[in-house]
Length: 326
Length: 264
Image: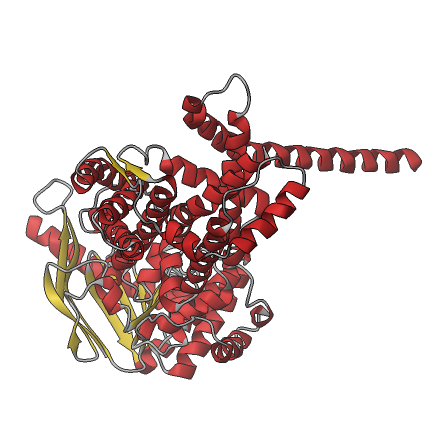
């Protein structure tokens, strides 16, 4: 149980990068970008095929980021220059990417078995003492089995937080402010001499670069890339954003981005726990995801409505009490 | 400063809905001139604004700003020269962003946007100074989201954002029309103050004849896509609403008579 949750946190932090990308398009740019399902695999595929052809894992991961950026830019161009509806541009790109990904990978699945990955390289230089130290704590807390390594968690915390701080900073720069205004009030920012077309292309590009990075890392941790591993990725990203905002708030950008990361981790934990329920199977995961998103969307509204109702009733009761007293 | 030369534009040409929105408009604004534009609905005021701001490209004619032909320049490039306030108080600001962030974006209107922080300590102080001139207490709410401000406050902020970078041209498109009388007066007074202070070359569209008379040093009346009246100087200062209505009847009435003569 504890080990399963550890695994959920581990992959949650990696998926959080993808969720940050989704946050950038859905929330900041107000651009519902469905490219994600394809660009996640693009990232995984580029990294996997490069590594299996002898490219160093770090370079392969960087190439994945570039590939994702390009895919996102094309979606942005379809929307801004091609004047295609935002949803449709994403869908078109997603479907095109399916074939492109197959071309990149040359087969539906690329295995990284016995190939070096970023994580295997890190494990080589990771002092074993740290693992045994944390495993000691882990077992002391009552778990029978301890995780194989802690290097992934620590490394990913650094990487994901790094991307979070990059996002926070970027969104406060002059370009970043214009990007946010593009999602908020296009007419206004155009009248303040910003090229909204370019900003949309840039924003969707950066978003998909993050998604591709997430895919590249997932491929390396899982040891394979599969052409269908991106199905439903956009819903998972959305789930993370919505859960995060509901649980941790979204008052400022810094809060919203950390909330998205938290949301991604919570989502993984919920799915892990749900799959332990007897009557649910692995194949039910997409349905569980859809259900989580529904709850995360509907629950806050119901809670708010109840609070409002309670407040009204209290006020009325107080008023009635006052009248009686008089 | 601004020269609109022989501009004409027709919508839906060749269809039953054809509308000659502007017919050979010639308008020259000198530096520091404050022109108010009046006219009934469909007279072409908004179209003229849109042609100047770059929202619309005229069929023929040119728009020249500070000796530069900008006719074909896209809206976002042209906005480097133009400050604008819209009729809708929601249109001129980004509601989910803070007051200081909105001002920072306006600050970047005449500069290239870089990967440097938009709000710095130094700029913050500058923004505060500018906000103080509005007398609305906004200088103490730099971190408030603009969506929380009232319509009047937002319009005052929009006006500030359009003007504090000294635009070559200031375009005001019925910018007080959506406000209650008290707020409208506040914004009108602010407009007067800023335009005087920075000696801005201004074109203001309004439906309020009194406002058109009170503000500015030149008045233009438009009808059916043409400028039918252009008054400035002392004559403008002594103008009354009655004069305007009489003048309108005289010009359009005459035309009516001549039309009847031709058809008759």
